[in-house]
Structure formats: structure tokens, C-alpha cells
Image (cartoon, rainbow, N blue to C red; front, top):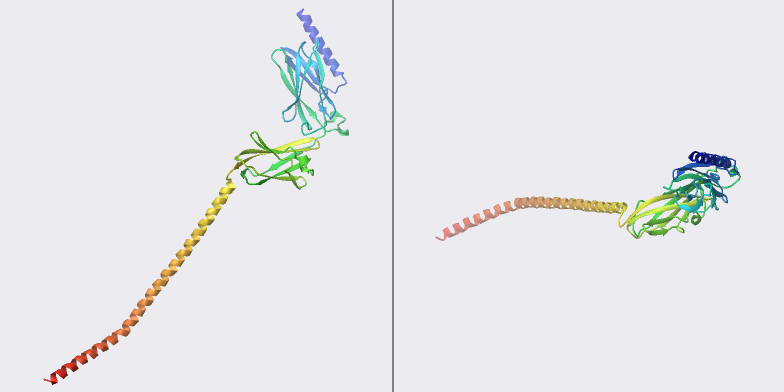
Length: 330
């Protein structure tokens, strides 16, 4: 009896594979997993999807199983969750998602489809599908999607002072060419956040040149902030981020204070040098005055000595004269 069940299971799987291989779907993804110890097969109708097309998941699993399908965008955010029950023979099939026109929430790129079985210990597997730009070049899915590159480069200071404005710059290129677009439409979801606080930059950007944009920002609280520049163009989404630290003083302000202090020290040193020079000149002047006084004293001495000698002679003559007069009266 067990052998017949095993043979029947092999025949069922073989018939299912034959059916899906001859299906009208452009099946490019085949996955074989295990649920409750039994093998199951999962397929999607195609690997590349254009706007308006449907993502169909189908395959063969165990009876009474329910497969949970999750679709994740390129950032890892789940945009669709659905469940697909198996029928009495274990087959399942369901259109789980229809691709809309591209937007900031659903942009062109690589998405992940996650399949989980509910029987026994859940068995979860993932595989990738591509949401691509439409057009005549995409009608042949075997040629692959058109390849485009949207790139964002963000530049800003890493240390800023609170309550003092600073400027951030963003460059946006598409396939290497600078993107000339309305700043609010191109960078409308850009923002700055710290914890639960968010500063919206949707209307802050100004076009400096084709592909080059800037925004003036003031941060009023001391914290670490993340600047997130997000660009959406022609269905493609690109990001760039940078961490900025805001504080009462920054390296530049400290350096400015050091420069000011150094300048004041230089001025003080110059004043001291000037004072030293002035004092030296005063000392030299005083020394010259002393020398002049010394010279003047020498000159006075040379003048007074003959006069003193003459006075001495005169006094001596007078004494001698008075002595003779006194002697005559005797």
C-alpha cells in the first residue's frame, strides 16, 4: 500500500511538471522545497515584470497545506502578503500582485518573493524577480530588462554648530548624465532625522546647476543626525546618507578660538617687544644723560679750580697785607 502511494506521488509530480512546462506562462523560476518532510514545487509565471502585469505563484505541495507569500521591495519592506491554500491534490495557484505604475513606493528594481509552508516546521525560501521599465525593448522577456542607473551623491559637513546654518549638496545622475529636474519633484522625500524627530527637506532644495542641488539647514539641538537624500526619476529610486554631529562648538569653532588666542598672544608678544624696545631706548637715553652730566661736571670742575686757586691767592695776599699794616702801627 505504501509503495502504491509513493508511486502515485511520483506520477502526480511528474504530471504536474509536464503541465507547467507546457504552460502558456513564461516560467523562469523553479523552486523545490520541503514541507512537513515532503517535497513541494513552487514557480512564478515570469521573472521580469512590466507595469500592469501580474505576479502569479503556483506549484505542488502537500494536501491541506497553506502557503504564505510575501513580496519585498529592494529596501526589504513587505509590500504584499497573501496566502494560497492547496487543493485536494496538493496543487495551488494564485495571482498575488499586479504591478502598478512606478512611484516612490514601488520603483523599478529587484524584488524578493518569499514562500512559507504552514505544515509542521515552516519552511521558508526566497527568490528574486525584477520590476522593469516598459517599452518595445522589453516585449521579449528573454532579452532581459533595460538597464539604467540612477545615482545620488550627498555632501555635507560632518560636524556642525547648533543654531548656525550650514549647507548640504546633492548630485543626481541618470546613466551618468546630470539630471535636470524640479528639486521638489526629484528630491521631495529627502529628510533629516534623529531618533523620532524628522526634518522634512521637500521644499528646501534649490537647483544650483543641472544635476546639482543644495539646501541650507539649521539644527537647534545637540545630537547626531542622519541626512537622507532620496531621488526619484523615471521610475527609479536612489538614496545616499550621511551622519552629522551637532554640538555647541565644533572642531572649526575650536580651531577658530585657537587661532584667535594665537593672534592675541602674537599681539601681546608684539606689545612686549615694543615695550622692551622702548624701555631699552629709555635706558640708553638715561645713560646718555648721566654721561652728559658727568661730562658737564668735569667741565665745571675745570672751570672752578682756577677760580678757587685765584681766590686763595687773593685771600693770602690780603692776610699778608693786613699783617704788615698791623705791624706798622706798633
